[in-house]
Amino acid sequence: MPTIDDIFSSTGLLAKTINGFVPREAQTEMAQAVKEAIDETGSLVVEAGTGTGKTFAYLAPALLAEGKAIVSTGTKNLQEQLFHRDLPLVKKALSSRRKTALLKGRANYLCLHRLEQHGGNSTLVEKDVLGQLSEVKLWSTTTKTGDMGELKSLPEDARVLPLVTSTVDNCLGRDCPDYEECYLVKARRKALDADIIVVNHHLFFADMALKDTGFGELIPEADAIIFDEAHQIPDIAADYFGESLSTRQIQDLAKDITLIFRTVLKDAAQLDKAADKCRMIAADLRLLFPDTTQRGNWAEALMRDDVRLEVGKLAEALGVLHEVCKLHIGRDKDLDNLYERIVSVREQLDSLSDEKQENVSLWYETTTRHLIMHLTPLSIAAKFRRFVASPPRGWVFTSATLMVNGGFEHFQRRMGLEDSRTLGLDSPFNYPEQAMLCVPRYLPEPNSFSMRETLLNTAKRLIKASKGRCFLLFTSHAMLREIAGKLEDEIDNPLLVQGTTTKQALLDAYLADEKAVLMGTGAFWEGVDVRGNDLVCVMIDKLPFASPDDPLLQARMDDVKKRGANPFGVIQIPQAVIALKQGAGRLIRDPTDKGVLVICDNRLVTKPYAKTFIGSLPNMRRTRSLDEVESFLARIDEE
Image (cartoon, rainbow, N blue to C red):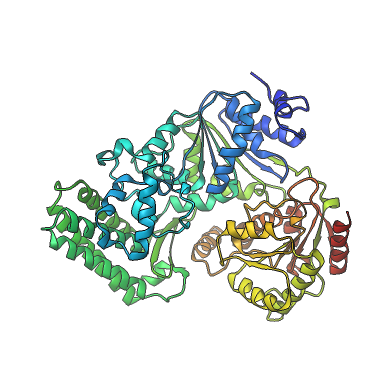
């Protein structure tokens, strides 16, 4: 069996297979550490700076090891890139015969039973969805995988999708008449049979939460678990360790009961009426909150008389639905499943109506149509620590952004990984030569009114100096819209603004036009890879501190205060540092890239915590002068 050196050296297996492969000391060191973590069933937390080649550094040891490995990454796009591009390359270099599988969440697979249910009853489907339903039916006759991603003509948020895919709630499992043909079951069998399974974080934790309640699991037992983009895990895991219930779930439940009443149990009018009452009360509950999308404190909302009254009515109506449904148990498999769903929704509503619970945050968010109630644990460390400890297996957590001020304490504390081995690897890029960091002089205070004018003027100078080819990143949608609106009248470059179309379409348009300027918020701070002279400037409007109004953040801060610590230092600064590192990471993506990072926030100069931020960023040349920035950008063009 080849050693790590046999794979990563200048005459090694990767160099022989991949044109232009250059050995990197940090990559070899990481691969060795990953191999040890897997062999010794230990846990490793590793920050690998941009350009380290961390993907190969964990895939090679995973392919060398004997047992099964799960590789989990942040998004479906990264998952597909890993599975279709990186994994085949390393597998070929190692001449490995190990079986690989890509597994997505159940919402990505066609559900044959749901398709059939909606197939013959078009009266329940809105007219504009009928066309999409016909498309799905036609495609369903030829697909081999049932992966909805094959249907490129459907938008990502197509309204037909919930009708033809299953949820944990409405899946009949082994009782389903289509169980043997089920695409999800087939994908899962393939994964059970594979040695390396590529998943995403949401799927991993959804499965982990299911395992906790004893419903069985989607992700098979593995000997090694590797998380890429691991900085996203604390928040995703906390969601899955909590509870949430939305008015949409209640309305879907009612719709499914109506469907059964109209097609199978035509004598059960009482059931339809009881379901309809739940649907109407759920809609009335949403109307008690403003039309706009917002987040708020659910425990406080429950103290309002109107909210408390409506939640009480909903609990009562669900109780009636439960009793009526009980009378028809055994008559239809789908109805028996609905009975289980009603029981589950009642339990969730009970749990979300108790505002006196400790160590959790009760919060809500509204979409234009729905209200979602959440219960999230303030800390998952103890629970996750137990999960990592047993059964013994290798754990690897890696990202380009885990360290704050040179240490891993923030990530380790949140995840209960205090005993893990840690490894920090610098990027191989020559940042002092390749990049410049500018905090312009004479900046007003971040939240002052005059800041808008400063941002607009700075953006105009940077766009002119870089001839487009820049990202303008904002911490709020409101500021993004305002600056975008003003820039439109004052510059000739094409402006691509987040929210006008999908993220991928914006990126494609940006790469197709060398004068384009891309303006975005959170979605473009990470997971975007633009190389070479297509991106020479990134402007960030201010330090990305999370909104202090966020109810979950408030609850965590109160909890830290109770323990006598300073929440600003323990929570807000580390989270903002990691977000800023992600935004800054868009700029230099390979050894020949050059560019400027401009951060328009004078707190990077005036506040004591500035050194934590600056110390966590790559070692770029620094300036306070936009004139110097302009000459740096001019030199990139001359080269």
